[in-house]
Image (cartoon, rainbow, N blue to C red; front, side, top):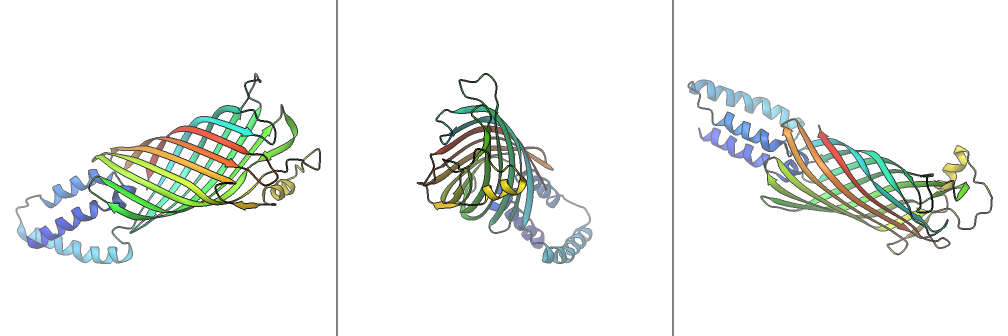
Length: 304
């Protein structure tokens, strides 16, 4: 019975680690099932001891290959929102329109957390002077972050770490300049802060704040030498990856705020309602500023 109590206490300790809280909130429901199994009063004491011994023998082999607290999870999110563009290399008017997209995230954690995500977004926009949304804007971004546990209390947890983000932000303004592409591509290094608050065994509030510190970026020339851009694949790739500038927040700054309410309708699947705000400002030495505001909501599904 002492062995059984030790096993029960270790199981409860594992189920309340920070990694379980961050990666697998649905395990809150599973922990109730495990406690019921442990506390089940079987009539055959010898059978109980045999099961425990067999579990320990098999578990030693399994856990030697896969750590108990090494967990991973994936997610898919559908994105809907409002996109605002201000490309002053073209003019100072603001283009606004709806934006849609999809994102994928892969998260792996043991003592610390390693996270990768990629997203694709598409938008049609117009100014207040246009009747139709002729402007097209596309985003392709990916980021990686490595987070360290700062503190982990019973209801609230906080992690902090470095993050790197890469984004291609490309626009076409046919009503204003039908012969050129406009872009604001960048790679930035910064910090990521995540705060989690457990509302209940089935609900978690998730707050994520990211901002850039150092960036490498490129924009098209303000005064272009040619009337038409090189529209071949090789020409576009060359333009997107040449003449990069380097700077801090005075030249390129990105702020990303993300909030989620995570819940699970069954122990195998976790859902989340999301809101995000993303701001980007880039200004090169020979360019005028580019600014981008995105407000978006989404629905996310977590899966293993």
